[in-house]
Length: 438
Image (cartoon, rainbow, N blue to C red; front, side, top):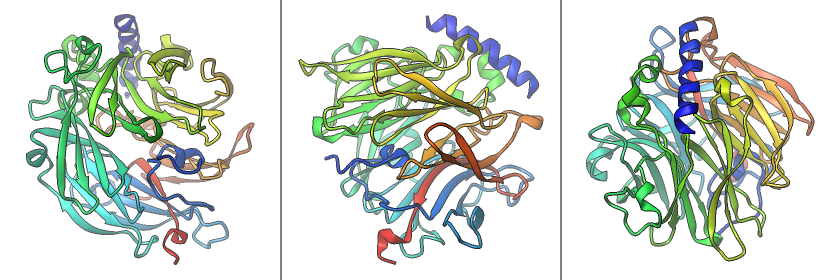
């Protein structure tokens, strides 16, 4: 199955590149995709922070945090109001907010640098307060800091690779103010760490998400530095490189930080979204190479399973699902696919049988999707990786905002990140002065 779809992806990508690759109260949308330990915006978000890759010949060429005003009625609504460059290009990718939501951590996949911004003192004007440049040394060899997930007083950083570039990686914990605590390596067949079905463990990492009331954490898998920093066209034309992608997810004992069970989820499972209903013990993911929707769920005997429950578009055309977002009531799942630039919205009231209810082309390429607290506003960005984004006219780089009516997406505003001299927009996080009593 993997080989079949990997080959399909190869064909589709070559074609494309030839053209140019303790739970708290339920929350909505992008907030549901955040840590349950994190403070919540209970009203309308006021700012969107966009972690943006620098591009040669575009503005200052550096990675940066871009702050966009989304306050209704503001004279600068839908405009960039602040830009904070970190200097240089580091393959800006993911990051996250601390549990108190006072700091925004952002990372570089290439240089393994981490920057911590204060967004509490003035949410409209983030300030860099700390830089971590010894992540690799302190973690014992993890490279490519990816997600930054809030735990009580801590941040959990999921790595993508290691110092030899082949991909076996780990989870790295820091205090909120940036002091290293511990590293937890992913299980492998050679070092199973007590996990069930560890013979299938591949050691790759990507996302890490916690369901506190069941004391479980899920991790997913991608590929190593040797692949994600190479041009996509080179990767897909290298048979050995195409073998070096993840096909597993791991269920962890969260408190002990030890792996419990390895699931076989072929085709690179990426983002993880837990449901929030008190009896909804399941999470969704999508597989990039096989274009499938998977459900990881607990049965009546408290046993955990992984099961394919749907497909995204036409898998033979390799739409490449990249980001997902689940609504607060667990009824609606947004799925973005990079290659065809589509967002697809599924009714997942029955999580075992997703039903497509709406689809829309956002652009020539699309990556991240974030929903507002009330589920009425949806934001999209375009960039995947610097060497994997499309080229030429298809290299659209944007932030686009829509109203979601429950039936369709209605445009609100868009910002052309190339015309504004900013770069490639990737991760989004929301801000509000109300969080800090200001």
